[in-house]
Length: 387
Image 1: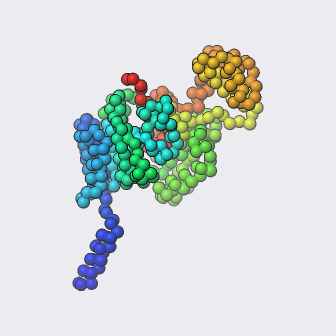
Image 2: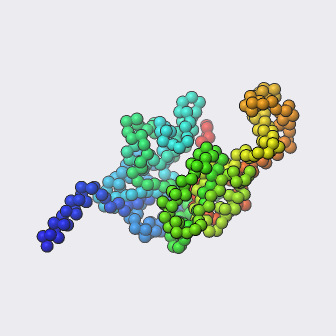
Image 3: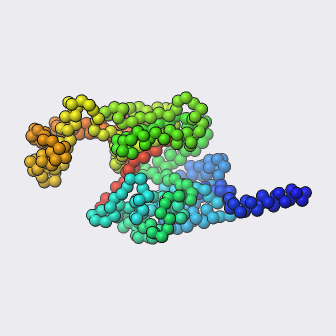
């Protein structure tokens, strides 16, 4: 009996010394209106979370201020009962836009000074909420977009990203395809229904678009190993990970669309550049053909001529600038024909075929269960000046 007591006390002391905490809390942070509109779906989601072995903690945002939400997350992280290991932000939760932290991004390096507006060069990030070792100085709330709050990363705090908890965001937009609350309800219904399905992730697609990681196949080689580390059960099957590179075809869009419409595809990670309403997939076709190389140069000359003319340059100035870039003379005809309606239409059609556009989703219906867009601006609503 004494020996058992000694062993038990030793175990308690060791646990205290290691400081290991049994974290099973999960915070669901949602604004009041979103919870009111989707209460049944959110309450069901809490049951799903609980069924996964976590303790759901509902946090109704009554502050509307990032600092207050962050303070509540820190409090829940340090709670004695059910301390949180992660959180999800649902609905209209304020967005922190930060400056002096661009070096932490993978590619975003817009100049903070000069002509660039703060709304443009600041980075929207939820690391404000989930990285407790980062410290911020408040700058201001955006006068037009009230959900934006600007902060500066303090130079005397940690300068690396090691999130204390994990986080995610469910953020339906109101200006695209219907009412945002209806979209929120439908999305949460799908999340809840997925909990009852016996469909593990075993079919995965990875896509490499133009300009991603400098078009290096070598840089992408380890992604399969990374997927095996995250989904080790996939090692036990012969097939399941598909890879598409934009260089497989001159115009890869149709191939990608066909893959994303596969009913058995579970997860797709798409590495490419992006804009607000386009996924930028293909670049100028790579070729060893002299004729196609000439065609590429001709289309380039057309687009640059139109661009120069819009900026008030003369045709002669445009031609001289293009020749300087190409390092070679170009035919006068390429400049003269650039503004013709049929030539412009042909160039625009070729450019349109390179990328995937929001307008095409009326006929394109993805079946993949989950997609990660590794791209700038996809889904981003640009701030309009003076609105």
